[in-house]
Image (cartoon, rainbow, N blue to C red; front, side, top):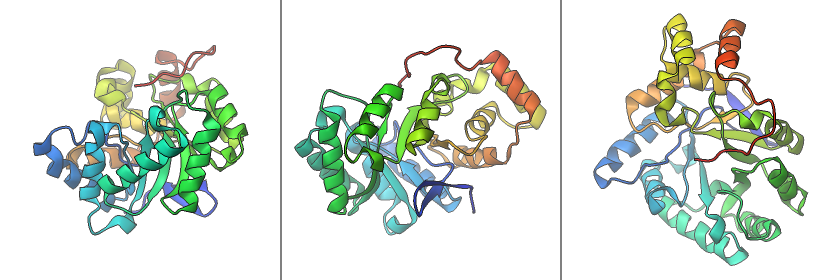
Length: 279
């Protein structure tokens, strides 16, 4: 299946919709079902798969590795390093552990999971070393607000950053104040994690109303809203084939001006600065 693609770097495009893996790998008896969902998603075009060393203490990376067995070349794999592993040696060691769990020779995109105490220049240097060694292809950040992103991108090598992964959905619009614009200014693509607020948007009245109008599900409306302008990548988690299918079908929903106005009224955009939330 052909999905809308979005450019994150010169000559590099990824699907507008990917697959998240937060909370995967936590229960051994679910791992095969989770890997099957990822494989099914790839068959539908969801070839971007996001994970992290934090998720299930590496267990999610193992599920991704299981899903990609024999078909690594089909996927664009994203993983993330803990801030407390973000010094020069720590990044290298953490990346090598992730590579073993993923059962791959390289990670397509490696992110600093959230800002920490290690000087950002040291982390960037480590990321650049990993690129030179062929262990990662691109790097970026996660949970960086405007000031933090500005500081990071101003460092030598910071201009190579391609992604800022942030919490963004109809109920979490803080990034609209300045951050989305800052990302564009730095040539950094926003990637929305928890675009469905881990399923909690299902009972939001305005989303239910819009969903009834279109004959779809409220969570599909939420996902369609996140990717409405095709300038934010979304990575919802789906641990079953049915959920994966529903996410893909959300791309066909066209929200009109009345829908968007209703969502803005019930879940308004920010009118003043506020801290970027994290989950």
